[in-house]
Image (tube, rainbow over all chains, first blue to last red; front, side, top):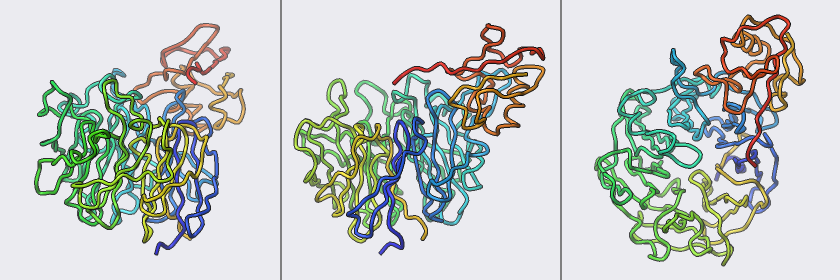
Length: 377
Length: 85
């Protein structure tokens, strides 16, 4: 039993909202907007202290920044030094357009946070998110810069470094993913990284041995089996069991008319064989909508060998939204709760591990991310 | 000298007109940041470039360089170039 009632942290294209639940997760109260009109890419409550809440913000017209709250958004303080690339003498260096991914560090490093940005950069804070500095060789390494490509090589609103995953057994063991640019691993605390892309498909006609052509959408590390990684990729769903280095495609067993393209991937916090994906249409021009206008989550309980459609309560037709890579999450209750936000501004929840769904909120701006949090009492 | 601040930055200044000083536009922005911590990075990126949707006018002329020399009689107008929906 969790110590506190969960909150759902909702980051959208035009602000942030917080859904507060009752103990049974049946009644939810919507709090917000926070930062109305600002682009909030990620809103994360520190699981280590249950108090520190970080928001990655920009407006589209101002430079990016981070805000920090220790009272669940009743008040906010701006980061003293938000993520920024190292300046160059001639002004030709890169500049951060927005922070995309916020990742709390391991329990053994309670003040450490990581951030992934667009264009791709990796940053670290050692003071709870107040000041940030470039981290590792990635941001300026010539080989990595080549693999990252330029503005035209990434997602529509800019190439992103995401899916920062830290081995709970060893803080110096990290994984990151770049869209585009592939999945990479560090075993020396970020001093160096190496590609981890064997077995992954790329778009037909391109060289799968080059990280440049890889487009991981979401990578997750199993908290109770840290040698296992799952990945939702531009070209399918994959699993990797270390020390192996070759990803195995597990999306081939998805229904043929649905396919295994999507953005988010959610893991069960206690069972490494159970995961969820939310497929989208990746045909022809890539509509990136629910296949056939009928949205559904798919659950596997055996590591991706078999999948079960879960759509009870969801629209049965003419629903053409998308769930983005950070917009689906799970809580940690005994009977797991699942949550997702849509590009059409709806928040959906399941209190029974995806067997049935109810809509918690409608008419919000386009949802970029949802995260569960457990505030300290 | 007098500085006009656009509305998206009023969270920092709480007013549209402030006083700041500096021999150059860069120095004036440094002074603004001393008075209103964080405001400079919202206006100028880490490479010293005025951000894409931020416009600076002095004497009716758009200024792009932080090295632009200021006169005490100048009035510096920052405005936002809004776009999108």
